[in-house]
Image (cartoon, rainbow, N blue to C red; front, side, top):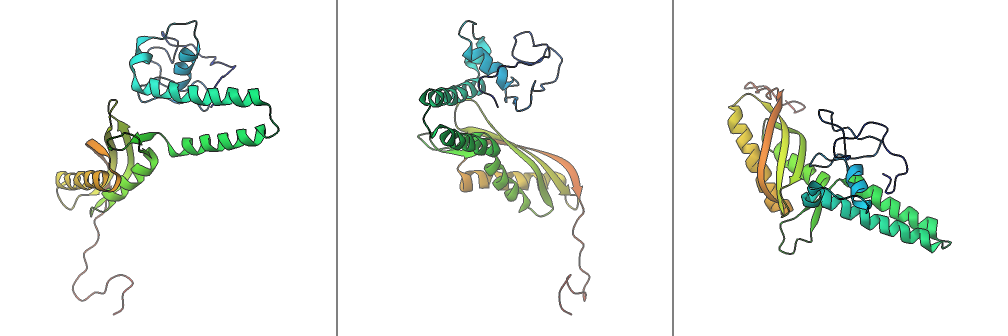
Length: 223
């Protein structure tokens, strides 16, 4: 992801100049661009905040996702400018270390706040999602497919969205309720996340485990 791109998208910008036009899908204009949770393109937000000659629109000023992205990019951009100004022999090695850290953070995904009083603790979304999927899988007849966590507002509250495969050997509503309880318990006890809601969509059906008839050994067991 370029911090100070010299090439811009060749496609027509939207009415506000920050993304696709009305009715167009939120498709990044170049490889490595990102669509923020509010629907704005990261490149468009960065272009607005770095261009002192243009007025920043109200959405960018009030949106927590846009502000967080702009502040993070501004900090990395300042570090990059400082590295360029140094011109020391170890400049390339230092730049490589910085880029390795950036790539590692990109692989982890966005950071979410934990429910601590100081609001200083963070957890990567990918790590939290893995833990919550495992919690869902502890419910018999349920398998988590995908899990996403989204920050709610500017506090520490988080909303969980999960897709699920479930067996139909018992009422689906009861199984989903059990999965939701397991996810909420793991989010609070294991991770310390303040989860406000767990939205679950059942997208596939699991075959129920076959019942053993009396006198037959379990699979792989001795007679």
